[in-house]
Length: 272
Ligand SMILES: [Zn+2]
Image (cartoon, rainbow, N blue to C red; front, side, top):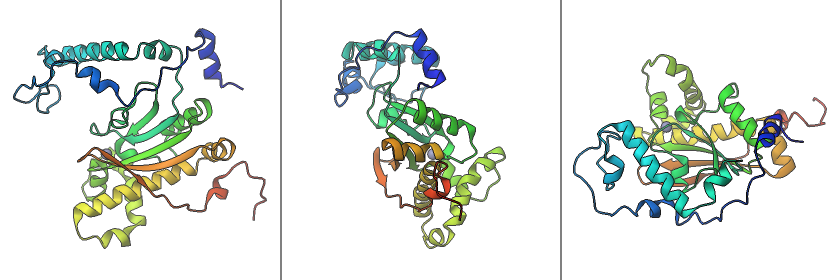
């Protein structure tokens, strides 16, 4: 049975055309490189705060918002040229197979680091990729992705160099943020002996990034909808860690905590 949101969507939209050919590996960078290379202009770009890139056209305007719009125009033209079916197919539906939970950090843009196109990943990001079981925003995303979109994989991705995790390792009062960062402090407290044995501060924070990400994977695994989907259609949940210093993703080993039966709300097992 279709979800109400899906039904309404389908009533107003024509059936989707066949998906575009999967030729992502070549991808968008090639089309953007149609701009002549080696146009690098010395100095810092006022829009990004980073060294200027070799794309004069994108930064033709002094107005940063105009520059963004110009960049978008260039990008949409390039993608349309390379994948003519893509935008027409996305106009009527989305069928992502991946749900991504990541950090809001600007250095961890999932679509870019996974080399994907629009429509290929459903996303929720917040500070330090926290997925507490009482957060309505991430829970809503999770429910929609699992029940309606029927994603096949859920990825929780932490990252080295995470400012949220580093802040949770320090003892500074940050106001409202402290409420959110308590999610990480709880993980820190739970693994205090292991973390205190790591004398190097940077290595300790990196280890907490991994432990925190694994804990969020368990939070996802404790969701009753996720448990149902894993049993009924083989949904899989993964933990990743991304290194902002080299652009590489590593898969984390997340041991089973053997607690599924506690969170499984469709089990016929009697209470002990
Ligand atoms: Zn972060």
